[in-house]
Image 1 (cartoon, one colour):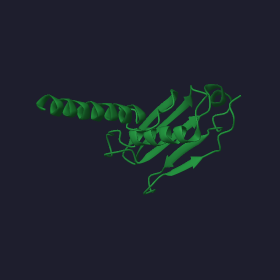
Image 2 (cartoon, rainbow, N blue to C red):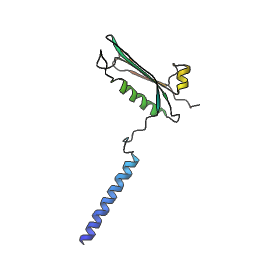
Image 3 (cartoon, rainbow, N blue to C red):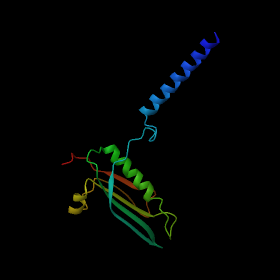
Image 4 (cartoon, rainbow, N blue to C red):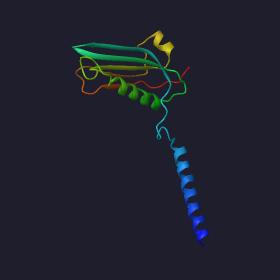
Length: 139
């Protein structure tokens, strides 16, 4: 009878372990269910730091053409978080932040006003503004 109780306990433990592995794989252990950020290339990164304002700007181009809107928005929010928390000499954090995402490096080189998503925060803005252009099919 003792052996039967041990076998039942071992069986329950194995079922619990298998369930946790299945749940872990389904939610992708490392990212905790968050989608992977798309691959990008930094095209331009600038800092301007004077007593009147501390400004940072970043322009990036997508490398992965199989990217969807939500992934690009997540990338933009991630880049904004990083750029907004850079240590500056004259202010604790940048007072002006500009982040632009381009569909490709070629589009940036042709006309840098053709970004697909961007964020801007000026000195007097309490919160910045996110602007999303609709994602058109890649060509």
